[in-house]
Length: 184
Image 1 (cartoon, rainbow, N blue to C red):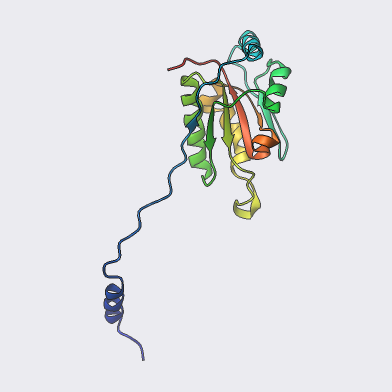
Image 2 (image 1 turned 30 degrees about the vertical axis):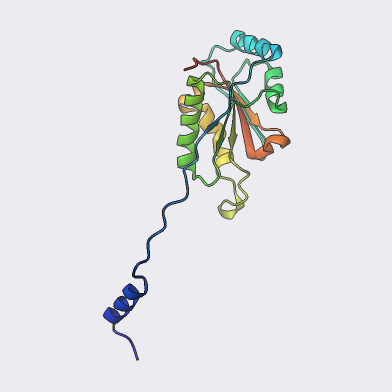
């Protein structure tokens, strides 16, 4: 025998009477800024080379494989990119994009790069993961990151990027080297 839908609604309302909805516990990803680290003499030398070699109006030279990401402005000393790849620059801020969709992640990356540059930071780490939990196991964020760094507001700020060393996230994270900016 079928119940009356109004009776079902009344039974349900009585069963959940006094229940309070849970508050939202998921927070949006936010950058974590580290305390400033004094530059070594070697880093100062590299910065002088960067300032001398890069005029800021050149397009990016994109070099990436299926796993490894790497790119820089034309004319950048290859030693600088090698040092960035080895982790010789200390990341001064991190952005973790785990759980973000591509549209949200792009906006966060652009805001992060612009804000870090305005703070006078030079090296960033963006954690995007390897995409193993993405639909069909295909990465979404990692293949898009080079385009986001080479276009829009980031293209005037970013000197180079490369996959992080294995000790700092490997191909699931990317180091980004920025032009000299004005500290707040």
